[in-house]
Length: 80
Image (cartoon, rainbow, N blue to C red):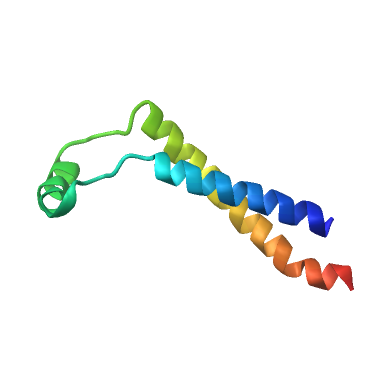
């Protein structure tokens, strides 16, 4: 059981890294941070297409990462 949790945790970690790197940036440097913030607050922009899918996959993988990390932390207690 401990080995299975560790293998799943490694797979989820790699998947989370890949999905985060595939997402597009929200702003482009300092000018994007200043101008993009007001545009984001005023305009109702929704992520569409691949960005929305990557956002949802990121949330799912992050929750799995949290659960598997807790299980891996308690695996020492279960092994004894």
